[in-house]
Structure formats: structure tokens, C-alpha cells
Length: 359
Image 1 (cartoon, rainbow, N blue to C red):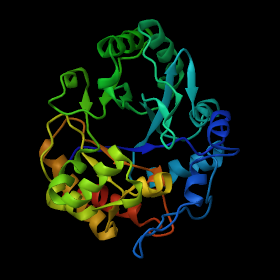
Image 2 (tube, rainbow, N blue to C red):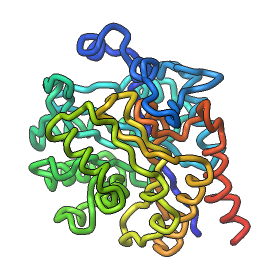
Image 3 (cartoon, rainbow, N blue to C red):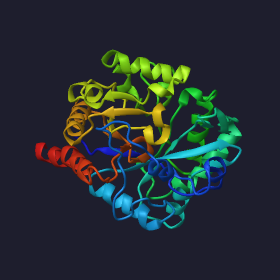
Image 4 (cartoon, rainbow, N blue to C red):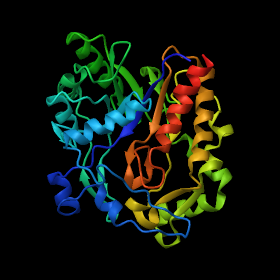
């Protein structure tokens, strides 16, 4: 297999910002939700961080470079960092990226625009609205990103900075957005932009606008068939707010077995690795748990994903890891108290050591 580019979704939430203090309470970060998380079942475990940094602050240069070192040492190319641009120059959680740029840190990253509004779902309150304001505003966003695009640590494919869009279907003038970025990139001396669309399938009418696409929620499509009772519970919670019957439990192995993970992707579709799932720290009884996640099942899942990549035979093998540090969603590859570095070691063994042995 050609050299693999692997990007892990990265949440830059782990530092204090004025807005979160106002909306959720003083000094709120994702750690706040994790520290108050409770177990709902005898078998239920909450994954928590370990040494050397425990509940770290992402404004620390040492933490950022430590994350990059352990990731790249285990074969990850870099991080797909969630980026929050709401329009009219309004941004959130951009401090870590700005520190990386300003201090020229050793940190491989690219942006995934998290283009969605923020809500307090408990009381159905809009906190920050995502706006789509047209070409001039998109150009402002590009200019905000440009110093990052020019950074040597920013991930590029075929000399083009990688830029992802989380919800392309929400953008009323998507073609305008993509055209604006591409034209501005060329005028700035870049070759272009390597666009990746999330929540996108081959059937999406706009999929052709992207160089590559993925739908990281695809594994949950099978939950209705494989877990009908849990699926009904999930709908009752979501639609009728029957929170007392939660949380919802699905089986990791049934949704992400090696056999299922081998199902062929479209040529330009990016396979996705799931590093566990438990949203109860964030949502409590409204959360969802993938039961049965462990090292053996994770390894089997990865082998299925590797088989997908080998069948695809793309010029640029590309893989998304979901996720690096979504601690309040139990969705992480970063070392934790249950698995230590074993998930990272498994990834390196499968996608790098075994690939080298077979070449």
C-alpha cells in the first residue's frame, strides 16, 4: 500500500473561553463534563486521562507538542482539528491553532469546519448561530485560514492544504464557498485546496465538489436492524424526551465487526476508524454507549478498514480516525486509564509494521 495519510479528529475545547464561562459556568471545559460523569451499568467504564498531563490545557505548548509526538510516533499523520467560524468574524476555540502558528510548534494539523450552531439542548436554547453570509464573508474566512495554510506543519495533499466541511448540505451556496476558497488559494500562491466533505455519500448531489468525502456515522446505519429495541429507545429519547429509559446501548462489535468494516467504500470515500463511543459524560441518560469496545475488537475493526484501503487502491490512501480526544464522548485514541497506549500501538502495528512486512 502507498504511504498512508491518517488524520484523527481533534477537539480544541480543552481550554477556558469567555463564552463557555457565560453559558455553562466558570472555568468550563470538556473536563467539567468528564469529571462529573457517572456509571450507569456494572460493566460501564468511564475513560479518563493519565500521566503526564491528565486534564490538560490546550493553551500549553508542551501539551500540544506532546500530543503531536505520541501521535506521529505511532503512525498518525496529524490532526483534523475542528474549526469554529460562525460568520462576520465570529470564532470560538481557536486559541490552540493560533498558538501552534504563532510559536511555530511541531504539530501537524488541518481544519475541519464545524459548521453548525451551538445549542444548550437541555433547555433548547440557541447559544451561537451558524451563518452563511456569502462570498465576501467566505473570503474573510479564507484569509483567517491562510496563515495556517502557508504553515509548514499544516497538512497538505498534492501540495494543497486540506480543508474539511462537516455539514456541506447545510451551506445554501456551497459551490460559491468552494469556488471562493479555491480561487483565493491560487491568488495567494497555493496550488489550490484539497476539500474533504463529511456527512457525505456518493449519492449526495454535491459529492463531486469534493476531492474526497466520508460519512463517519455510517456504522450506525445498521443499528435499526441489529438492535431494534435499542433503536426504538433512541427514537423515544430523541423525539419524545423519554430520558428516563436511557442511556441507549448498542454493541460495538455488531456495528463495527471486521466483516462489516471490510464493506467496500466508493473510490473517493474515506474509511473511518471508531475508537469507542460513550456520550453519557456529556448527555447523561440521553447518551449512547457502544458496549463491548476493547483492544481485540478494535484491532479486528482496524483490520477490516485496512482491507478497504487495499481494495480502493487510491493514489493517495487516506484514513480518518474518529477521534483523538473526544473525552466526553468516550471516543478517543489518546492514552487513557483503561488502555494506556495500546490503541496507538495497535494502530501502528496494523497500518505500518504489518504493511512494511507485506511490501
